[in-house]
Length: 310
Image (tube, rainbow, N blue to C red; front, side, top):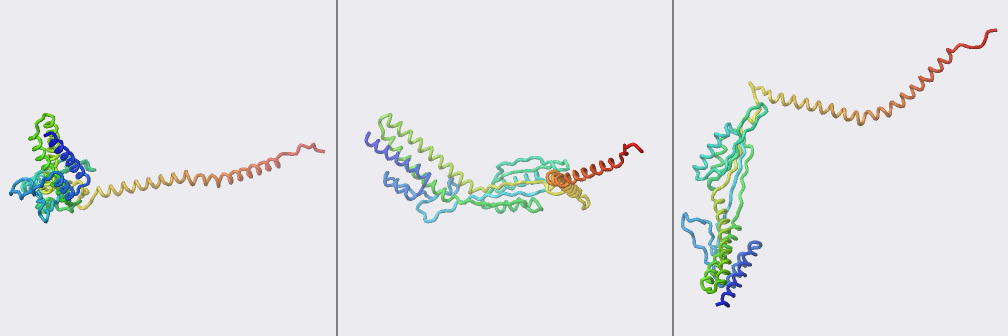
């Protein structure tokens, strides 16, 4: 019995090493071949599931073709008359389509005239086959041009197939470990196998969770929506006159004038003033010297003679 247990435990250790390697650099055909040769365990193909049963994307390994698993998401940014009303309309639309609201945040934006208007940021999920219909319905909330629109898709078929293959191998290992534990007689043997069995089951649950996430993400597309009030996008207009635009232009002109004045002052102090000093200071000194010399000569001519008269 001990020899049988040791051999089985060695086989299981090699199996875990193979599963760990597959998570880093996985090749489905090589991994299944190694497990089949070492453990003589043939992983059965996953049978088609009944309608409505979870895991509808489980793959039949014997099938010639694989169903594609694609995650589609979208995002919209647009201006609406009332973001709060549009938020409620979009939430009702998502529920009517069989989806739901993931999150909805509202905050106030203060305009230049002091008026506060609401803005909404929300995320919804709708059935992926109705994604285009949902986007069209959301865009009907505004008569303004859409500010930003994005649609992206991600093919996760390869990742899902990898997870499915690893799940088959781990389930086979779980069955083998369960048989070994049932045949074990010694307490330490039972505890050792049980510890490995718990580890395998944890990996199985993690893989099932990842597969379920892929399935749900492919079934329900996410749409991120930014709703901005029209008042925040349009300038104030009175009978065709837009005082806000005129004030903005006047402010820009003032700033440009001050910038020009400041630029001239900087250039004058750094460039023009030193040049002027270099040019005019010597000239001023020469003129001052000549003027002083002329004055001294005039003074000397005006001095009366001190010689006595005959």
